[in-house]
Length: 155
Image 1 (tube, helix red, strand yellow):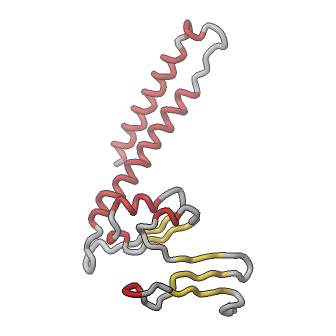
Image 2 (cartoon, one colour):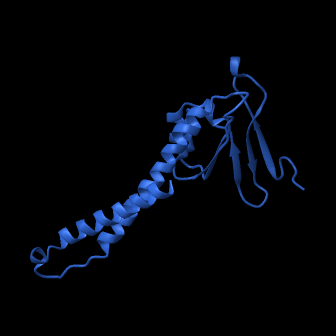
Image 3 (cartoon, one colour):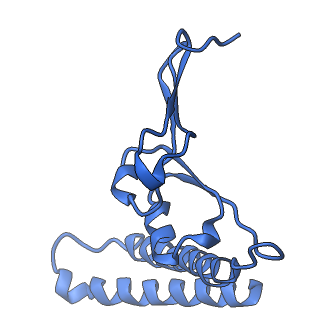
């Protein structure tokens, strides 16, 4: 069983004025190892630099450029209402998710082209005569074309 102050500490909002609302802004767990769960305003993207995991609730209510900045190279969970109550999730579902899928697809094409080019090894001497650069370019272009046509037939 966890006990407050021994195993964890709760931090409350200490803002004054209009932002003075008693609410939990962080939970520090220190029972076996240190863990921190902290609320950070979405526009304070610089504070997310050390985050290992980011959870974005109602992502549709946050401007799309800020959501993109929050993604980073970390595990990110996003939740949003796309129908009904908020109904503002259309940009999130139509634009951001499409961009993420397209980006992933392009990465596959790039990886295929690079692998094909790297597979061609030329001679140590007389490189210009062997036209290795042209062979690599041709293999890369063919692999990219094959990967692209594979995407369009499955998408």
